[in-house]
Image (cartoon, rainbow, N blue to C red; front, side, top):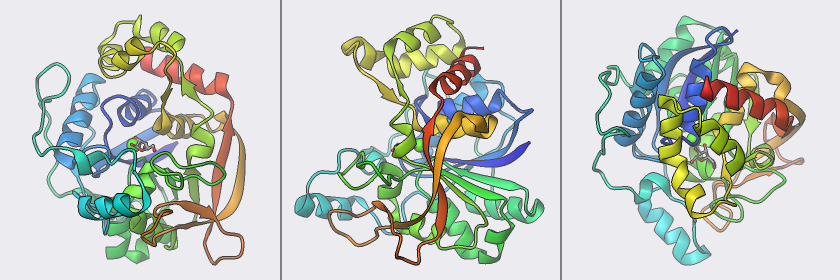
Length: 320
Ligand code: BDR
Ligand code: CA
């Protein structure tokens, strides 16, 4: 049984919300103690509404949700503009491009449950304190909340059971610049700080593994045919792109991390590598590099998966 904190940058359905939905379907395998929201895909207030809505939809609104860091440690819209002017486009800037207005989630109504008081960073600290060596920290957005918690209480890092994150790219190109993946690019300094702590075990689900599992229209069509509240949200969020281009595919990044927490056998290949984060503002800002000669810490880099096993779980959990 995994006991987790789910730290998320809150995509509508694909992919943070789908990942959380998967986890809430299997409380026998994963106990989600809390959801902590960080800026990334969306600003925190909007992201929180997506996740509160999702929790209500799956009947899991007793899981508390905490608001976290509203901006990265160093990166900012102004810095991103400077980066683009000098070194070329960043294809997705998430919350940096979003308005401050908070729109109601799909269905037009805000969820009844509201964010818990206290904030994400105190919640992370209190929870690790309360369950020493038992908590798996799961980060599927930028690592700002985790970095702030471990900066405040570095003594807690060795008392985390393990840290599992979606982000980065080792043997493949980035997805927002040729060098960088979004979660790490949004807050490279946080990722660098977290990987430098005394966390006993770190597991990386980067683009190396997530690139292998695109969602195609045939599976999407089969899933939304279930016509449940959850698949209606899926259709609302992901349908327009498939309608515009039937050959389109979706990356469902965070869902692979969620699936592995439930069924570790979905991963078929991994490597232990020293991984460093590039924090020098330049064309490779936010890239992750396997640096054999460096003093970077060694982490487990997930590389490939059993597609049938993964998609079987994904489909079953999201349509049941
Ligand atoms: C990652 O960036 C986020 O926008 C997605 O939810 C995923 O966690 C993919 O690069
Ligand atoms: Ca995410």
